[in-house]
Image (cartoon, rainbow, N blue to C red):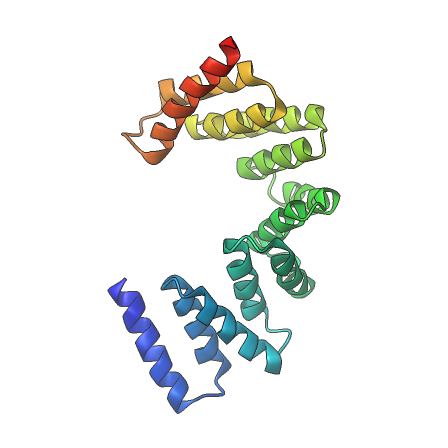
Length: 211
């Protein structure tokens, strides 16, 4: 945290010397965000975009701030503009698709993720994200297909953990429990937040299944 605060201080000094430097303003925006100063970061983004509305780094940063704040409509607006500039950017595509789903545009989000699947066929997380998206469109057959593909690509305990929660969203509590048990049986994690969550959730799901 001290390093982040020092970065903010130095960049603010640099801005005083060169107030029109987009490089310093952008760096300061990222530093503000790292320091948890989202309002200041967004103000910096807006200042840059007033002079250069197609500055990709700042459009992405502004979208990220909105994404972190769960302001999905505003995030979509920034990410859409950034997407027009760098449509191949993987992280941008994932963020943009997530926000599209959040505002009820699941079909548009699916188009982006289906393209990501073609570009990154061995990234199991993309298949998990697609499974979640298909759940939101109530296409449970496709959701289950993508869960299986994700596990085939990366049969790690962590993949089973993520798959369990998608299966629960599908209403398949029995298989969700089996996947969560697999994670707990095979994981080599110590008492991490994920493992604690898995234990607590397993108890809750088992109770629900009995009822």
